[in-house]
View 1 (cartoon, rainbow, N blue to C red):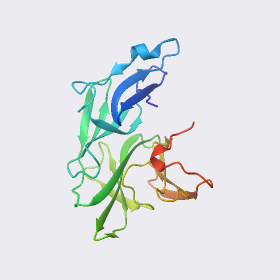
View 2: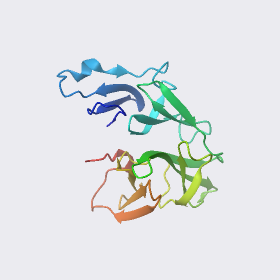
View 3: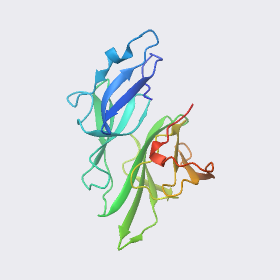
View 4: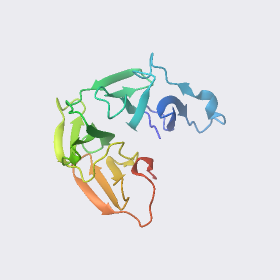
Amino acid sequence: MYHKRTSSNFPSLLLSIDNYVQFLLELKPDDPYPLKSTTVLSPKFHLPSSRMRLIGSCNGFVCSLKGWMYDLNHSVHISNPLLGEYLKVKLPKREKRTCVAYAFCFSEASRQYKVLRSAVSNFARHSKVPELEVYTLRVDEKWRYVDEAPEPLCVSFSKANINGVVHWMNSGKNDNNYSFNSWTEEVKSLLAPRGLKTPSYNLIPAT
């Protein structure tokens, strides 16, 4: 679900094709045919490229990935598709064979937008301790280390981002639920419901 930073109180949907963000669908309450008002997101105005993978969205801002996470040359962008504004997030230098994952969140308490990054390096089948790093838009000049990651992620955090808290599960057993609070920057864990088989990256918020 995509919520705009405007006076209108209706939500919108970001639609993807083959994992690439392609369309913006406005869900106006008085429009019986919302599909007819679908906006095609063009790389000439709305997004920096036509091949952008969604990381997350908050208050009209979209965080997206260009390239693959295991590609040393991938990039992360924050954009406002409706205004045609975007910026490129400066990423830390990476070592080869480093698995990374990103999340995007907004802290109501501090009114700050943050990009969360999990990184772990693998050398000769021995993994370093995964790390969590945070980049605060318009505040930080570089990424800050905040904690050890409870579980290495090589694909994605989940899309479950509620009230500035990012939720995800361990990718192997799905027996633990983890959360990152964008205000306190604390990581917590909680046992997941028994028998849950849904991968972390398929989790969505229910509010």
